[in-house]
Image (cartoon, rainbow, N blue to C red; front, top):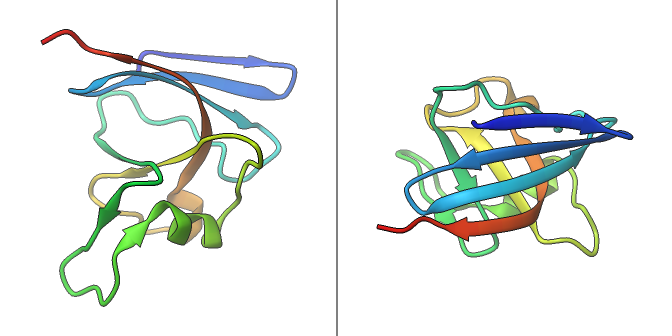
Length: 106
């Protein structure tokens, strides 16, 4: 987590990982417009991500997360969930649209 800004009902987050820096947005009126905790690890889900957790019968995908929460139409949707999992169900899932992405130089 690098930066958070709220302007006219839209929360804009700047987050980064080993791949790059992401600018994410969400509607603050939505229950899943969460601010990640600085220093805490999160899994970033896009339309290509699929993760099968131990004991799960199905893969967790962005589409699966959207079924629990919301979808931003006409936008590239992404989700953040805590790396250690969500104990609070859909309330622990952050749903956003991707405004921009910048690849890190390695």
